[in-house]
Every structure is written in C-alpha cells, then in structure tokens.
Image 1 (tube, helix red, strand yellow):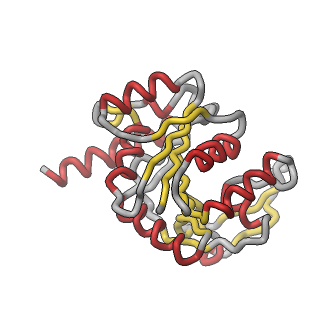
Image 2 (cartoon, rainbow, N blue to C red):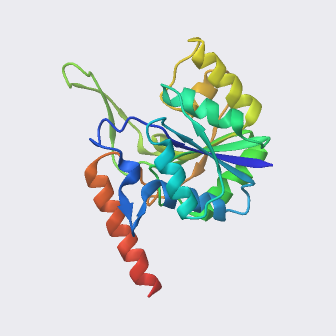
Length: 226
C-alpha cells in the first residue's frame, strides 16, 4: 500500500501571502495538486498537512472539490509537519509532495511510486541545464562550478519506505541530524537515495513570477485540449 502526503503548511515568506490559495482555473493551487494524486492508480490514500490558521478553509475547498483525503494539522518546521502527515498515513510506502507543485503529472507520481517499491528511497529531479555555482554567501565569490551531468535539481515527490523516513524525521526532531529536504535527512541516516527523472513542468511556486509561469502553462495545456 502506498500513501501520499501533501504538505500545505508552509509559511510562504518569499511569496508574501498564502500562495496555495492562489487560483488556477478558478480553484486553489493546492486543490489541483491534491487532485493529481487522487487520480494516480499507484496511490491508495492521501493525507494533507495544513497550518492551523488555514485548516478550515482548506477543508472547505476539499469538500467543494469532492476530494476525499485525510486532513491533519502541521508543526512549526517543514519536517515536523511532514512527520505528522506520514504518521497519519496508512501505507507501507509514502510519497511526500509540495502542495505548491500543482503541475505534477499522474505519470510522474506513478513512476515514483513504482520506483520506491524497488529502491526504498527515491526522489524526482531534473538534470541541470546551466552551470550551478557554489559561492561564498558573504562575498558572493564563486568557489566552485558543478558539472552539469552531476548536478540535478531536486523536485518532489520524494518516496520512501515508511519506516525509513519516520526514523529520519525522529532523528531530525531530536536535533541529531539536519537537512534541506527529506532526501538529505534520509541520506544522513545512511540510506542511499535514487533519483527518478522528473519533469520541467513540475515547477514549485515560490515567487509571484512562478505563479504567472504556471498559469501560462495551464492556459497552453487547456488550449491543446480544445
């Protein structure tokens, strides 16, 4: 059994407001994200993690969209919120996805779900098309240029055997390990993580310009269906 945990409990500091309630074709970003997972045949149940302040509004939209999922309240940190979602899930495996990535395809979801059953720890990512520089954050001097073929840009879904990610979250909550994402937390417990080639359209909405790009892609896709 495979569960999906959709994280909708971020602070949205860089966006300036709650981006998840921004509209795509008259429905919030998070609704479109969640619907993709309910369509995926490899996913057996969906858990949505929400902030306390927005939980009632999210629940209202979920009911309006007739999306039957489990809704839980998040924590202060991103990994604490995801931990609550994973804990509430029913599957032996779990896919964790950003609520702000509404264009994730059903095909990619199913591909990650199949991969996690084989490899136990996986993540979607795309190969970099430009040179990624490692810099000194104070002086902004370039310290290193990463090879394109070795520098991939991380996406979600991430997929893990449930016991593996639970162990990583528990160690992070205790302050024993730190990481920028779920993949890094798991790697620091000694588990290898395999990349599943992602999709360039699986863009995360972080800034207002990202929202406009996603909206334009949605319009193009809708025209193609006409």
